[in-house]
Length: 286
Image (cartoon, rainbow, N blue to C red):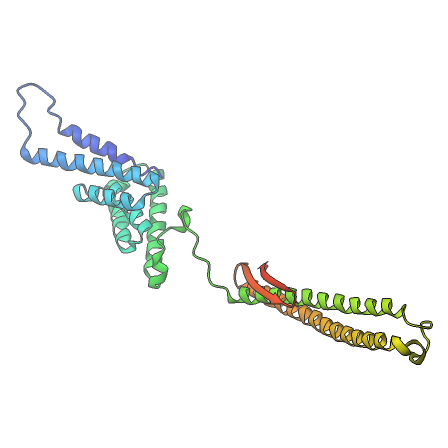
């Protein structure tokens, strides 16, 4: 907005009034006029400092400088800049007061209609936003940045229990799947071991055990039976873990989808542990 520099010209003009121009016989200015000129000079300097701070985005310094300028010169343009700074730092009641004073100042309206209308629209929007924030709960009033200014800062992310549950479920599912695969592989190793040892037994495959397991081969047959029973147990446990992993994965996916509709996606890190596997799982719900 072209609001923020014109008061400098105003201050210069007011200072010019104090210039002892004319003949050498002109009387020295009255003490009251000297005092007024000093007030204008102080206001002008503080206002320029406020504008510089505003350019830097240092709204705390800008507020202090504009407030100092306002104390020394009650001008509508200083009121506008002061009101904007108050908006930025969360002093909404004061912002409404100073912005309203600027709108009702006769000097504000004694300019180009196009310029006045544009500035009036912006100032009115600030007043409406300040009024809205004044009516919010105290927690909502702790964020002074304006949405229309583009200066809003991202709010801290909310805690998302659904994401942790979904991530934990995905980690557990992965651990179960790995454990189930390992057990299935171990079961197959036992079966392969039995096949190899069976080639050392007497007779041919398919003949009765009384033939193939006679004499010294009996110990090998007993060991093979134990290996096959172990293989069956490992296979059953592996299948159970794989089925559980699938069920947990489906449930985690449902939780992730439902939770995503209520909040933004979130990445989670979940520690995992299982038979033959341990570590962490980094997962994201989307």
